[in-house]
Amino acid sequence: MISEQLQHLCDIATEAHERIQTNFADIDPIVGVNQRMRGSGFPADLMTIDCLKTGKRIILLLHDDKPDLLSYQFSYKTSDPESEFQQLAFEKLTSTLLYDWIADYFSS
Image (cartoon, rainbow, N blue to C red):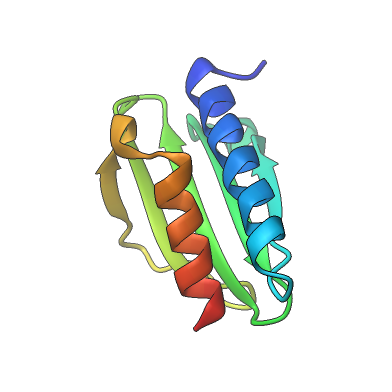
C-alpha cells in the first residue's frame, strides 16, 4: 500500500521529470520507488532519481515517524549513501524545487 506522502512525492517527481525531459535533452532521469526497507523493519519509503550520464543520484527518504520531514541526499549511484541526510519540511518540497535540484545537480 502506498502512503499519502509517497503518492504526493510521486506526483511531484512526475511533474519535475516531465519538465526536465522537455528542457534538458541531455538529462534523462530515472525515478525509482522502493518500499523494501519496510520488509527489514525500517518504516520508511525511498525514492531515487538517477542520471545515467553522470552517475549521480538524488535520494529522497520518507520516514513514517517523521511524516512532516523529507530526508534527502545528493550522492552517486556507485557509492553507498552517507549516514547524514539533509532535511526539509515536506510541505516545502515542490515540483519546481525538485526540478531545480535535478537540473543543477545532474548538469554539473
